[in-house]
Image (cartoon, rainbow over the protein chains, first blue to last red):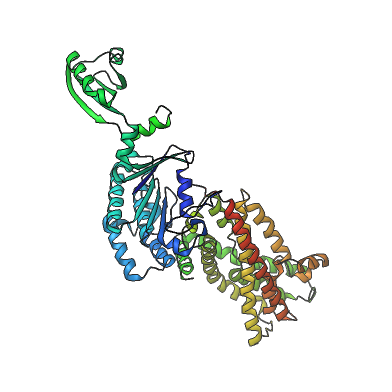
Length: 274
Length: 262
């Protein structure tokens, strides 16, 4: 599972569309599964799928099952295989009770689940996901992540996703590719990315009584401040010394040492303060 | 083709989601031929005919044009234009599936519903005003009519598809659709039989594809075509030329396409 990261306008969706065969590259070539996507060969289309945020392949006025039947015809899926895949996907996403409801009456989360099913009926080898969890509630986001992990584990489907939610990426991607302005900046594991760019740790401290921010700023870089609680960003090698210093100087209720979040790295990296 | 038949069936079920629309279509189906027949009846006055068209000729002409519209017509350029504009076309680029065919198949659904609704109306009108007409139908003519309807429908669909894919270049396709619609009604004999229009319009019509959409099959049906094979040949030629042009434009359009939408 590959996470495709970068700020708005970095070219994530454009790259995805190019790999899916929607866009012609203005220069150079793209290769996916040994095919040139822009040629849009049937063999290629049978092996890929794409879910694009709000663009849906479901029929607004009809139940989702009707769109599944249509996909069955589009991809020429044999009936037994279709039934088997469909019931598997339905069970994984627990959507049995909404399949007969017209799509227009479904919530955003329910629609996304139905979309995911539609995109996987022909058992694609590669699934492109553009912001699959955008606008979904936390429960559904979690469910979708679990589902994607399961699909990847069970069917070995390669999943390439872009997301604004770093939790998506941290929870499901083994590999991340970071791009900006069409240029690749990083390609590797999430751990590697944190090690490369996240040379800091966070110290979150709950004081017994409120402490003045200015006073704390003299000790280290404060990234969050709420009076009785403050979070410091410190370099990896200094964090224990700083923790000891704080513990001796103030009455501390709780001290928590945290790894830098992927989201913070991205934010920091793209705001130009590497 | 099975997939587009499925689209047709899906669109058909969609039609029944909005049943109140069906009543509207029934009224439209009824009004159009009745109004045209009334207009020509009053122009005819006491005269037995104008330009070879008597009262029952007019009745048959407008009734068959109405029915032919359901077989041959169906405006879907707007749907195609919308699909391109809003990026819905993306789904047809990643699947072995065409959004243009989807729009066309979808359009057939309401036509079938309207045809079914309008047939009793047409039959009633025919019974009231045109029953004395003597229709000469042979096997050859029936076959020629079938081919002519298929070609007419293909010309119509290809023109609609062409209008639709201009969305790759223009922001809105409806103005082009409107202009073509007016030309089609005038030069295609929908407004009035071509032979009743000024000579210069008839001359221009010969060089345009519109007359081969409805006018040719309707005239074949009424037994007014001298050389059916020649007319059908021209229809076939238009289908070929328009198809090649469509394929070329589609390819050029896709190269420009920016894959709008997330």
